[in-house]
Image (cartoon, rainbow, N blue to C red; front, side, top):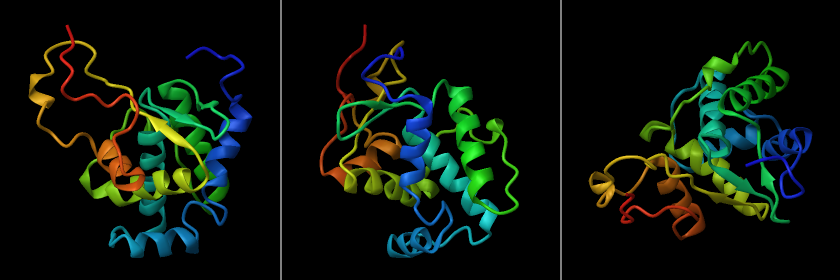
Length: 175
C-alpha cells in the first residue's frame, strides 16, 4: 500500500507496536499471558524476545495489514524495513539485545509460536485493531490449501477474533 492519509507514518506505526507491550516485549505482563496460554518455551530472555519479534513480523509484515481503530493501516514498511523496525524495537526495549533485520526478515510463524502470535493478536483486538490477511498464494494452484486450517497467524486470528480474517479465502481458486 502506498503512503497516504489512510496509512500511519512510520513513527505512529512503531508507537502502535510499542503500545502492545507497555512493560516491554519480555515484561512480566507478557510472561503472565504466555503462561496463561500454556506456552512454556523458551525461558531464555533473548530467545523469548526473538519469538516475540517473529510473532510481530508474522502479524505486521508478510504483506498483511494491521488496521487501527480509526481504519488506518499500521505499516512498518517493506519486508526488510519491517525486520529492521522490529529489531530496533527489541534492541531499545530488551536489555543486551542485539538483533538485526535479518533475524526477522521473511520469517513465518510456525506452530510453536502460535501462543505468541495469539498474544499479539489478542492485544490488538483488545485495543480495537483488526488484521487483514494477505494471501501469498496469488500465483499458482491453490487446491492444496482448500482443506487446511490455514497458517498459524490465520488460526491465531480465528481463536482471538472468533472469525476468519479479512482476506482469508482458502476455497477461492486463483487463476
